[in-house]
Amino acid sequence: MAKKSELKCRGFIGDRPIEELTEEELEAWRERVAQRFSAVFSDYYSNHIEEYQKI
Image (cartoon, rainbow, N blue to C red):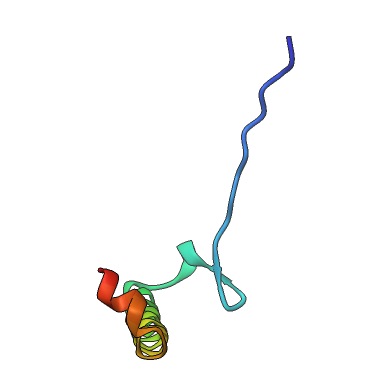
């Protein structure tokens, strides 16, 4: 029987591991991500009205 191995993943924000960020840094990052998502979705649906009408 084949040996099972664990798959591990480590997240980075910039050049720093995510677990080393302060809570304030994480919150600022979360806010920037939310703003970028909002801008991208707004741009997409502004250019694809028919897709917006489906939801």
